Image (cartoon, rainbow, N blue to C red):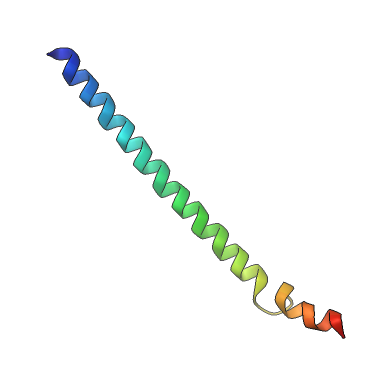
Length: 55
């Protein structure tokens, strides 16, 4: 009986770590998307420079 309780505690710990890893991954992806959008748009950025280079 004691072993079953210990196994359940370990399962809960693993689920918590998985949830934390998922949240951290989503946050990192959102930050990267924000940086990419800021890099591509705005003044003197990649999208604005490409028409000038063609002229």
